[in-house]
Amino acid sequence: MNEMLRSDVLISGGGLVGQTLALALAHHGLSSQIVDPADPALTIAPGFDGRASAIASATWQMFEVLGIADRLAGHGCPIRAIKVGDGVPGQGRGGELDFVTAEDSAPLGTMIENRRLRLALAAALADAPLVRLHMPARVADRTVDAHGFTLTLADGTRLAAPLLIVAEGRRSPTRDAAGFSIANWSYHHHAMIGAVAHERPHGQVAHEIFYPAGPFALLPLVDDEQGRHRSAFVWTVSEKDGPGFAKLGDRGFTAELEKRAGGLLGAMELVAPRMTYPLGFHHAASIVADRLVLVGDAAHGIHPIAGQGLNLGLRDVAALTEVLVEGMRVGLDLGDTALLARYQRWRGLDSLMVSLATDGLTRLFGIPGRTASAVRRAGLGAVQRLPLLKRFFMEEARGEAGDLPRLLTGAEI
Image (cartoon, rainbow, N blue to C red):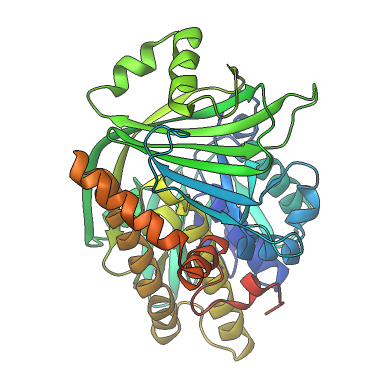
């Protein structure tokens, strides 16, 4: 009989959200075990993932508390301005909007390559004795009783804790097996993502350009070791066109990128693996069940139009950590129904509102035709002229709106 390995929580899913959660809990004295089928050595390999993420300023404050920010020093590019427009930039047709931060204020966010995030988390977890990784490992059996969850791994190892946290991403098998009710639909679009080196400096400016076929974003990255200027791109196309663009050679693909960028950054060269994936929406009606909690994309998946997907998951991390740490301090069972209900109330509404707002933006900017374009341009122009409304959107971009967990304010719990 294999020995039972016990901890305060079990985390199924060792991606960015799951690992950050384990680190946040360990920082406050709670032990965890992470189970994931992925090999961690492969996930930090240079060619594994060409994605980058915009980390909101509030999320960055949590990274500072947890010691992740220090490990990312020199690898993050502050976003000092966001420029939004409808159609090819520089044509002077009006309806352009910009958000610019003051020099002495926090940036709107920080662009980090996902590989750098994984490397920083791996180093931090290696120094966290309260975290145990079971990666790669597959779960052969899950059981729950009055005392908690037991996971039996394929090699016979058994793990136990009073609470199972599911951070498995959009296609979460544990969530689906538990019978959570999910609202979901497809946008019938594909996102193409990667990174380019470019001729002109980006000036720490992010660009969001709305075309009839879908939004196109250029997001500033730090210069590489050769001093080349770099940006990440997120390019949305209709699902019927996605396969065709994916088959283009690097030269043809880069030519199309330069055309969509409207010459903003000059000549471009691909410097990271291209990835393409279908875009859809999903949202769990409830994010808690019997001794089980959903976080990140297992709970909600949104369109990348506003760059809030990872930040939404990391807000889950901050809130759940606060709920569990405070519950531990007063001696509560971490799988207690009332304790988990607090997490449901805190995160359920906020994540739903962000999800619906993002869905609304996606649909608004996806309406074809000159009339729709004129309405969008009028709306962008109106926001540009209203300082209070601009400030509201800047606070949303920084992740500073709503009832913030203490970690997102830069404070210990």
